[in-house]
Image (tube, rainbow, N blue to C red; front, side):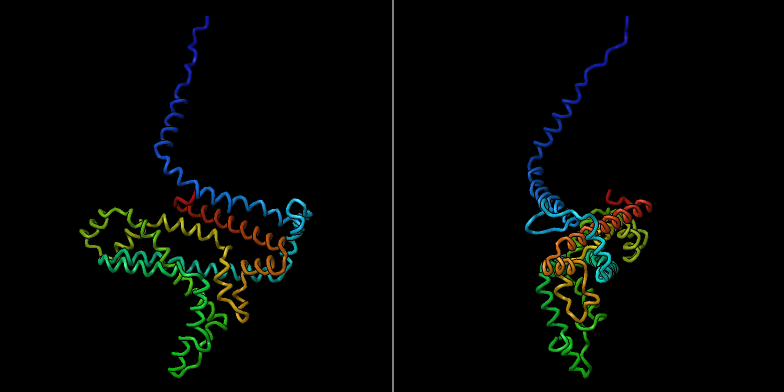
Amino acid sequence: MDRRATPAPNNSLPLVKRRQATGIWKDYQLYLLLILPIAYFILFKYVPMYGAAIAFQDYSIFKGVTGSEWIGFENFKELFRMSQFYEVVRNTLMLNFLDLAFSFPAPIILALLLNELSVVWFKKSAQTLLYLPHFISWIIIGGLVYQMFSNQGGLVNNVVNALGFDSIPFLTEKNHWLLVYLGTGIWHSAGWGTIIYLAALTGISRDLYEAADVDGAGRLKKMWHITLPGIRPTIVVMLIMQLGHIMTIGFERPFVMGNALVMDYAEVISTFVYKAGLQSAQFSLATAMGLFQALVGLVFVVIANSIAKRFGEQGIW
């Protein structure tokens, strides 16, 4: 007679499900708040992926995606044969790497400086003033830049001329234009970027600063040995995300600030896609460029995340 005990029925599974259902019902308001962001990502991030098929077709707006002829990788081959393709990729990488070098550290430095302010009303006023440029449209900023730096009638060149010097070609010479482009980007984004780092700073224990005060550490030493290490995981995550956009550049900023005299630097992927896709109706070519751009960005994210993991950081997955 087989005396082996028969396994008892697993009654824990229904209990787990009941607990999960209870937890969902308890926090149903939070789950309801998720509906809008999930709907946003489904409608504007996942559904448009269907259109990526255009990159492999001889697309016709009259036949649509289902009726257009499939031509494989011919659009990519044509894209890689174009000399302008390499120019716009070079300009996109150059502008994004320069932004990474100058615009990425700016909010970190601002957050560290704001964290050292002890006067509450001044700190809040400074934060508000630094956030404001983020809410100004690039169209308006383009007009302000023209009024400030135009060769004729610009405020800065009027002052330069009044001092007896020749006008500086801020917007008509590519190296000067590059400085204006980078400076405007820092002014527009640095204040808004401080929000994340200021939030990270609140998670640093005050006991560490008190212990440093007892040891006689000054502000710079506390900043270097406590504050920066405390927000280092946040810096790494933001850097990885920034590298993911290294091939993605906004349309408004180069389009508004660029002109025919600085196209050697101002013509980037986003403006190329606009001109090829909308102005020239080369939808397949523009889609191929966009798909290539997304794949390169994915490669940068994977590489940056792997490097961060090798150095002992958390990464983004």
